[in-house]
Length: 610
Image (cartoon, rainbow, N blue to C red; front, side, top):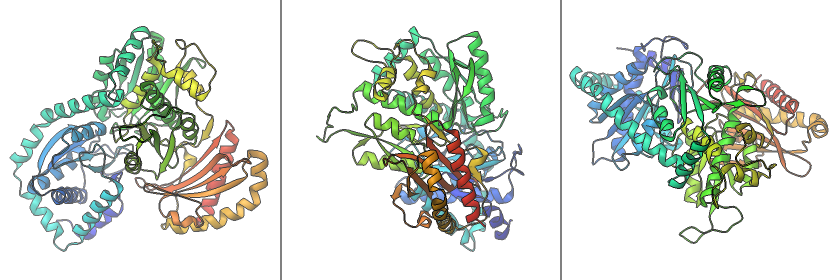
C-alpha cells in the first residue's frame, strides 16, 4: 500500500479548485498512456468518498445518485474504475455514461432535479492529453459553486489527515465484487441514451429561450438562405454527442473531421494553431458549397469551442479571437431579447411583480471592454466576477435574484458563452447564436436580429437580406486585446504569496506611473487610473492596497481626459495551471498601444517577482 508521504508528493503537484481537481495523471504531460499511478488511484478513490459523504450530508433521506462520465482522455477509464467501488461501498447508485460532453452530463443532471443526486465528470478540459481531473456538481446544471467547492476540498484534506484514511479507502475499494463493477459499466449505452436525450431537449429550450417563434423564424430563414457549418471535433467528447443531429434537424448542413472519440489530432486548447485544421475544412467546404461560412473546434470535454469564419474580403477562412466570439454571441442574444420583446431598452415594461424590467450580462474580469460598449447600446448592465466559470455562474444567479434578466454570461477571455438557463459554456449555443443572427429575416412587424444589432449600435445600414458574417463582425466596437493563450499573456513567477507580489507591484506601478504618465497621455490618451480587485463574485473598486486582491484578479483601469474607460492591464494566477496570466485591453485599433501596455505590465511584474 502506498504511504501518505508518497501520496502527498503527488497531491502537491495537483491544483484543486472550483474549476476542477487537475494534474498530470499519465506518466508525462503529452503521454497517451491509459495507466495512472497508485497514488492517483488512491486520490480518485478518496475524492469519490468525500463526494458521496457530501451528498449524504446534504440529504440523508435517500441514497445518493451519482452520474459519472468522462471526456476522451486515455486515463479516464482508470479514474472511473478507481471511483466506482468506493461510490458503491458508500451506498450510492451510479449511472455511468462513458464518454460524455461536459454540457451533456450537466443537462442530464439538471433533468433529474429534485433527487438526491450529483455528478462526477472526469476531465482536464483544455489541458494537454496527459492531464486529467475531476469536476463535481449537483442538479442545478453546473459545477459546484466556489463556496461549495471549498467545502469539498476542505473535507478531502481533512479525510487524508486522518491516521487510518488510507486503510479505510482500501477497505471501501476492495469491498465491491468485480461483478458489481461490471454491471455498472454494462449500463453505459443505456445511460448514454438518457444523457443525450436530456441534452438535446435542453439545448432546444436554451437556444430558443422557450420561444417557438424564434425557432420558426430560423427554419424559415434557412430555407431562403441555406447555411453550412463545419466542425473539427479533434477526438473530443462531442464526437458522440448531439451536434450532428441538432444541426440536421434545423436544415443546417454539417461536415466534420477528427470525428472519432479519442482521435486527438493536435493541441487540445482551441486557440491559435489549433484552429488551422478547422479553417482548412471550412475552406474546402466553401469551395464546394458557398453556404458553408462558419466552423467551430471544441476542447476535449466539449464545453468550449472557438469559431472560424469564411471572410469574403480576404477570400479565405480565418479564426476569430476568443473575445470576438463572446462579443458576437452577446450581440445575437441581446438582439433576441429585443426581438421577443422580453427586454426593450427605452420602453418601460414591468414584470409580474410590477417592478421595471432590467437586464444584465455577467462576465469575468479580463473580458474585453467591448462588451461594455455593446451592452450600453442595448441598455444592459455589465457585472464582473473573478476568472472561473463557477464565479460567473454564481454572479448571474445573484443578479437574477435581484430582478435582472441575464440571458447570456461567460468568460470573454476564454471564448464561448453560457446561455440561460444553461450554467456551462457550450459551443452549440455559441454557434446557434450566430446561426440566429445570420438566418432570421424581416417578416411583417418583426425585424431581423441583424437589423436590431445595426440599429442599436448605430451602424451603417445595409440590405437586411444581403449581409455577411463579416459585416456583423465589422460592427463590433474596435478593441485590441491580448489573447489568453498568447505567449506574452503567460508568465512563470517565483513568489508564492500573490498578495505580497501585488503589494510589491503597487510600489513599482506608482513609480512607473509618475515616469510614464506624460507619454501615456500624449501617445495613448491615458490620463488617470483606478485599481480594482476581483475575488469570487465580488468586485472592489478604488483599491488603495493592491495586495488586498490576494490570489484573485487585479485590474488597473485607465481613463481618458473625459473620464471614459479606455484601457486596462490585468493579472491573476491560474487555478487550473501553474502559470500567472496577464492581459491588456485597449479601445481602438492601435496594436502598438496594446503592445506597450502588455510589455510594461510584464516588466513590472518581473521586477516585483525578484
